[in-house]
Image 1: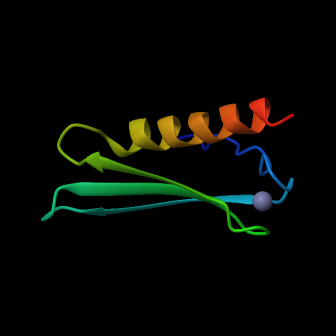
Image 2 (image 1 turned 135 degrees about the vertical axis):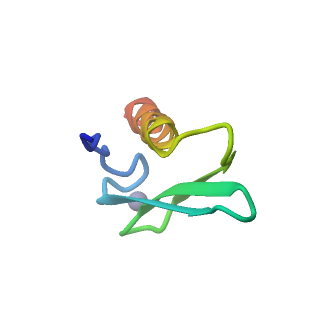
Length: 72
Ligand SMILES: [Zn+2]
């Protein structure tokens, strides 16, 4: 599985970090991107049974990267 690259934070240009956590029992997957510098956060919640991790990872990172592009 290839890791997609995160663009720098759209607000401060800081390094961004992708995180995900899922719970088989609650059926909720949460993915987020957080800027290590200014702590801007983008959080997504997904129904576990509908989405695979590789899909939600791509969606989350794509959304962050679009914000980064728009911020310029
Ligand atoms: Zn930032």
